[in-house]
Image 1 (cartoon, helix red, strand yellow):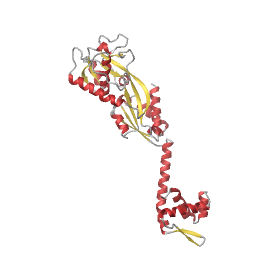
Image 2 (cartoon, rainbow, N blue to C red):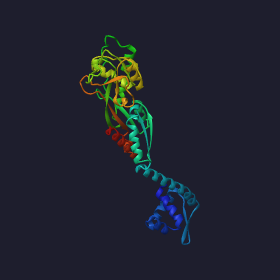
Image 3 (cartoon, helix red, strand yellow):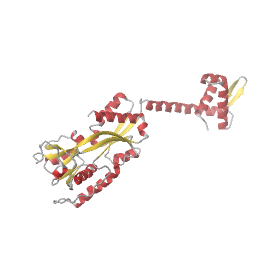
Length: 334
């Protein structure tokens, strides 16, 4: 096998014309140069230098190898410099995948701070909700994924509660339960490095003039058992089913939309009630609706856990570690 150190010796011998001069240039002994040249000639199974009088010159094979050695050593030097730049955060790349409410709240300040301190690090952003974002991370399509999950009953799908008197359409009920089952399987993050960012409180949206609006205290799901519901993304919809099941009823989901302004508009029009993450309301004007604090059936605040995820090997990459640090700082500064 041809080694890079042997090629450096060959280059020095060709440049200086002798083993002694090459040893002085490389800062080693003449016998060491002789040994490395013999090892190189053994690797290629042919003489590389020809002695002539008091000097030496390269053989035809030596000249061919030197021609290629020049490009190889230049490429190695460039690779070493690029790796050193990445290690020293003078360069690097972080591909970030985020769900929309984090994209508009946590990501901007985190990326701005990273660019201010390390302008050579490139950051790109693509939006995706979990579990798609987790699949992208595990599939090598990104280095960091922002995700969320609900802590009330992590990894557990409750048994469907009896339908309320007004009834829930069977197909909506089955779809919601199936979504809850599928999404609970995605809550296993044991193969990932998890950086907790914040607990995002869930906020209830009520039409103006609703009987519970303006009372000044938290609302429990059981108090809304007879309402029509407007649900959000699939994971949020699955959690809504779980939250209500904990209070002993199934929600009647008449509308489902991933668009938060649409949720606000539907509630404002008196078409139902909804629960949204607090981060969502920072990007949407809640005109025409009343907001209330939501508690679980046990009286605990209803929240979702927002985290940054990466793979164990990627967590050691300097640019990735810096991005996680900046995301943590953005969350802590809220």
